Every structure is written in structure tokens, then in C-alpha cells.
Image 1 (tube, one colour):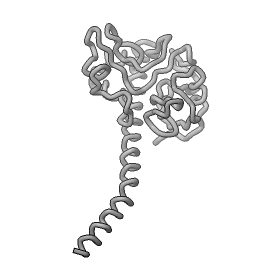
Image 2 (cartoon, rainbow, N blue to C red):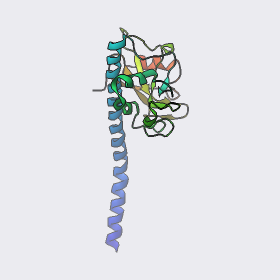
Image 3 (spheres, rainbow, N blue to C red):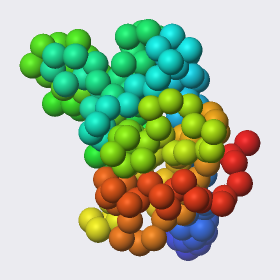
Image 4 (cartoon, rainbow, N blue to C red):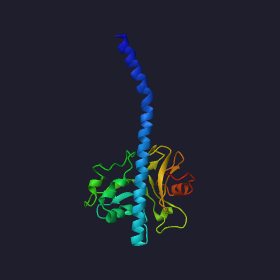
Length: 196
């Protein structure tokens, strides 16, 4: 009986010791998928640019891919590349925007009166977003992040797709919001190294 208690205590200590490491490892894997998603979106945006001589930007920012009537913002990439790309618009770390959400998920693409919203925020030209390929590197799309409510896809920063096709993690201030008009200047000037 004492041996069972000792073994149980040892197993409990090992679990308490390993659980935080497993949680960190799982989040690192999610960040890797997020980076891959943004790279896929970047490649699709370059193909779109080749066809249209413009990026799929509009005068309003946001998460929408399908507005109930038409593909909007970077959702236009789905018209050329197909619905297979749709899951790339959902960060696996996001708790706010999920691909299977009944009100905003992938199943709503192309359905009149339903919307689809991804977990990445598209920058508008009014926020300094380019409509053509700029000579300097500019942020195009970033993770959802709202420092005021303490919610976001990743802690302490956002993964950002830049106009040169690179994806970088940009640390952001505590109260930073991706939807603020001045937020993009901070990620444009981010000096973190590109993610390999």
C-alpha cells in the first residue's frame, strides 16, 4: 500500500513537471502552423498580384473572407486558388475565429446571407496597406490581437505576413490592437529576424 502511494506521488510530480513543457511544445507547433498558413496566403497573394497587378486590398480592414454576397479582402484569393486555401486563414491558436464556427466558419463560403471570417486581420490602404507591391517591405496581414481585452492568437505579439513574402513574429506593446490605425506602423518597423 505504501509503495502504491509512493509511486502515485512520483507520477504526480513527474506530470506536474512535464505538463508545462508539453503545453509550450504544443503552442510552438501551433505557431509553426500559423507561419505556414501566412506563407501560403502570401504565395497566393503574389499569384493574385501577377493576375491583377494589385493586391486584394479594400478601403476597409478586417477578417472577412466572404460577406454573404461576395469574396472580399484576401478572401478573393480563394476564387483563384480554391476552397482548399480557406483553412490557411485560421490560426490554430485562435480561440475567437475557428474554421468550424457555425456563424463564421469555412462551411459558409459561397452561401448567400452567411459570412466567413478568418483569424488573420487584413490591413487596408487607409491604414497604410499597399495595393501594389511596394519597394519597401510592408505588413499585409497579421494575427488577431487585442491587448485591451488580453486576447489574441499568440502571447506577446503577432505573426505578420510582409509584402516580400516573409513571415515574422512582431512583439507588440501590452495594449496594442491590430484594428487600431496606428498599429501597423509598429509592425512595419519591427526589427525581429525573419522566421526560417
